[in-house]
Image (tube, rainbow, N blue to C red):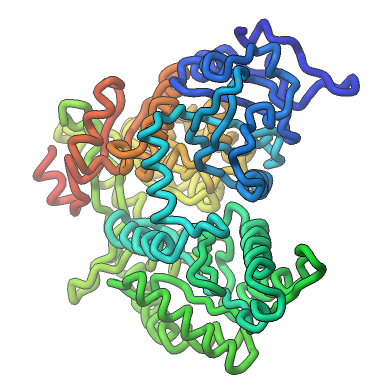
Length: 579
């Protein structure tokens, strides 16, 4: 049943927060065009929309689904813990992905790969959930199960040690190769005297305790981190740095760890009564220096854990390891950075953005710091240090000046193309940034269309109204805007309609897995479809292989960026190659 024909859903006389009528025509077209099932619910899990493909697969009509809970699809073949984990994840604002064995109206069972994300109102409140589901063949289902056995702990269903270590390696590689601007924390949580607990309550009860422990960890960390199981009584957390940004290790960081510890120490109800166990935590920040490996990061966290167990002082343990491994390095780095900013040593590098035939269409400007001894300082390291020193504004103004000078020379020779610069939302909203950018372009005499501002999806959520007003002002002047790292959450699709965006850049994490994961292909198709409906330009980031580029042939207007076509280079080298 088309969306506009579905009845308005009311419960106790009240209209649900998400009405089918609230879905505009563009959303209907995109959701109906999706090759898999799409289900939208309110916060309680009551279905308010199911696309045609969902009706075809399940055998239920829209009228039979609207107003029902999602457990109408349950087959009884999925353990309750999976659903508890699912709801714990999405209700905390995270995205849950996994395989579910569901049941058709006829009683026939079928496997689906499911991606569920929250839908958020402008104020950040969760008002519903959206599920994108892919029907799996028998062979695909078996392959998914094999992958799950290799990468997940069967008891808690958390990522296992190998998966955690691979994820740390990916984060470090992303910092080194792709100029990521955020570092992270890694924590090891050890259950004290777990062997004694196991002996006292028995193996079955101990397993129940571990499952509840994992659930509690997931609930506390939410969407801010990545939780896994390292061993029988150890868990690991990869925590995004921006969760604890702009605070030093002796204060709120340890407060956060103390709160986690207090939450884990609370008694847990399992069959037979209450069971409790204390936890020791080791924590480190990464990367502290260049060329780090996942083993280095895990070693530092383990050293902090040992000291915490020995001294019983969590704050002292974290501080001691960080001082031992990084504080002297950090102080030297900050001193060098102040000199580099004063001498204008941090330079812009450029990377081409091309069309499907490889023709130059635009470029992205990336900050790079190469010291006098030719040491390359990773962007996340010096940008984080600049934040701590309060120098981001000064650095941003220097980079804007460099970009304007480059564009003046390119425009004079008739070879200029639009160039984008990634700006943090805090700087973007400052009066100084606005004045410096606009005045600089006006004084240069350049057309504003040669400049584009990139804002990351996650950075704008908390200041959406202010960002929207600033975008409209700069757009009226002629400066275009791009939404970077797009696609990391379907709840953010609304940003395309709400913001005066000219371009979206599909996050490299989806592009990387295009040859291997149908879910990545489905997400990319959906983004391209919706962006096209809204007349928004599309750039695919991280295009490193011909398979990546080949996927977008069906979307011939999509532009491509990545090592397959160009690696970041100094302005002089880039000009010689492309202009």
